[in-house]
Length: 479
Image (tube, rainbow, N blue to C red; front, side, top):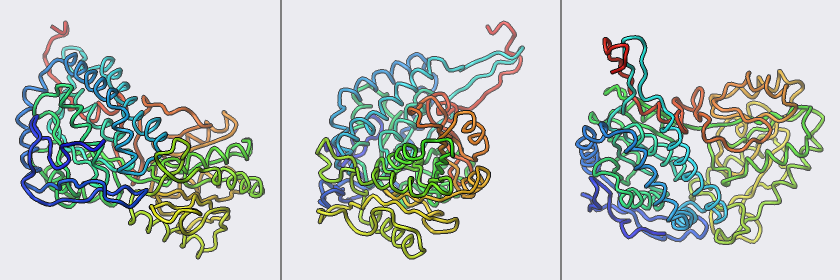
């Protein structure tokens, strides 16, 4: 699960030695042990990857769509063949419990490849409007910057639509969780992705990320990460007027309507919040319950949170892993402390590691009740297994509180379907989930407000990597 190419970059179809000598330890957050070292790139490494992508673009973008789809199908086959390698890599690099790594983290990459392939086959690449021909073609060289919390989900959600659209690219994965990205480069090589179409350079945001964002030969940057970093990316990209697509932070609301089964809805909401150790930008971290239902809701939340199985990430029974790093652990502990200091009720959890654990960045699954608007834990994205429960007097107040945030990535509503539909239309979020639906990888995913711009998944992702050309006077017969 640790690539033999860990100290190399993948540029122009080859594994190459970095131009610099800087290295960074990769920590297993469950054990706090350094399991490998990864090379960190420089501006010069980023430059040569971008130029390889630029040289490959002219020919690759003219390949027939059917060839690009066939290429993605080969990538899918190679990816599936290495399923356990990917699952183990994500278990080690980000602390994902092995069952979650297999069934959610690996699966996310698989299902998004399948969805993008299906979408590309049905995509309207060309259309006639009278005598004008409308053509959708690849935007050019794309810089892809991905996070550590859903490594393969975010890599595939960028690379697959970029290939489908006929773009070439440079990927900079998170330096915290680089193992799965290196395996992905091996998959692309084995699948026969043409030289220069896909390139990978590891490195930090201030070094490689900043160079890719500002590079004059990069036509688009697709970034997933924090809102703070997203602002820096957009500022760096502005002088060259490149397209910027971003999926950023969130503080997603979960409104439980009076018509819902309160205990069941709360339990479902807690489970969704705690999934991936709470390290998901769309996690439902603010729960709104009808005033007067606190006793039922708190009891259900306590049972659900305490049902988490915490421990060895290699154990199939483990459901909650560590936070990704010491820095993340310290941040989450600080915010839990803030919640206590500001007067929220600790329903379960609190400060420190779970009982019985003396190493690893494990946090206690924590539920706060009696949270009120303005508390730090109600405003800030925590990115850990921490839920804030607020009470509302009527649905109008619940909607107003839910929308009172700088974020707008996702929202959740539980209760009577007709009422939930009406509430969903009023929520200022890019995706609203009603009554615990299955993950729909054909639904657009992206945010309002400071949660970003652009959309990912299936045809929505392909659109973001396309330019639109109008050939006027083409002819009405389309010949």
